[in-house]
Length: 188
Image (cartoon, rainbow, N blue to C red; front, side, top):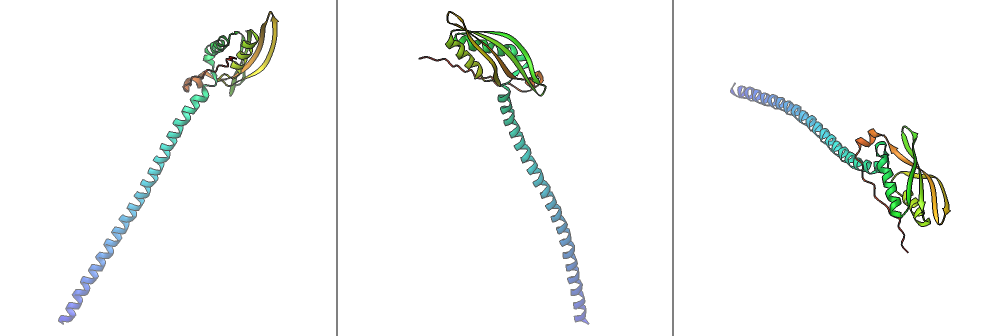
């Protein structure tokens, strides 16, 4: 009976060991699944943080670009400095500039300013002033131009320019970049 008792005891020990192994295998498999799920969540959060960081960097870059682009438009509150810059351009070329009228145009989504100007002086300075205005760092176009001589080599140009504008709200939310000056001075 002894060998049979040894067989039963060892069989019970083997079954207990196998049952313990099965139990711990199940526990470890469940924990491994939990760890894999947590790792997937960590990877997803890390990817989201990477996308957020990339988006913030892109937005910061776009904000700088937007400020540069906004610098080409005249805000509603910046009409007087814009006119002063036109007058300074005319003086730099040796001509006299007078603003005859300023009106709003365009539509609410794309507002514009329509500015009527008169430029007086010698032929060369008048044409250089027109060129300096036309190529000023603003979103503007020359819509009308008349040029004539008043007598005694004094030339007169009447021009109408259409300048891109932005509302006061848009201009106040975006920092404006200072427009760069352009001189078309000619020296032979």
